[in-house]
Image (cartoon, rainbow, N blue to C red; front, side):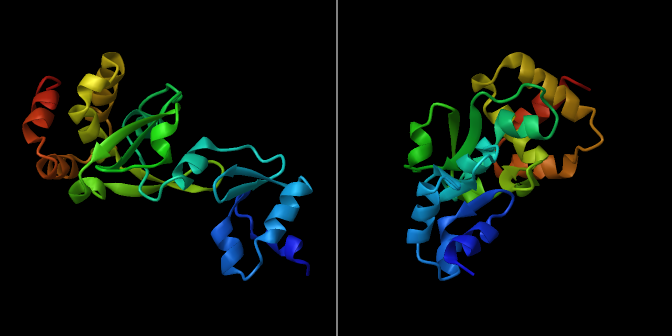
Length: 195
């Protein structure tokens, strides 16, 4: 089997990373050949799609930083707590992050201390079959409360209300996260209004 054919078989859900080619001992020059032959397309540094694949912004943005975690309003949208399709993607990165995501117009960056960056991270499977890192619902609600001043107030109130009445909520986890994020009082006050 030719190297080009091997590369085309390595694509998962329409995407391929350069590291997968290297891991399979295929010289990277064959990626360049496939690009020149117009069989694949480069969508980001080290990320390729087969020609005619619909490009998923979530996958492309996630590939730009191993520390990128979808959060805030973007996470709410994915969980079905907001019907507003993100124009700008909310992504949380560690404090001190210095990378390509800072230069993108379609990204709102939120910075988080490394000590709580991993708190509430989960995997989310997209319709394309690809998986991204996202904060779970309780962490997302804590982040919304923390970043309330940066949010659209109408969307914030709707999301908090929907969460409060949701069967998906986990109050134990919510208050555990709030304690670790030093937001106990703000979280309690936010939900006290709805009681």
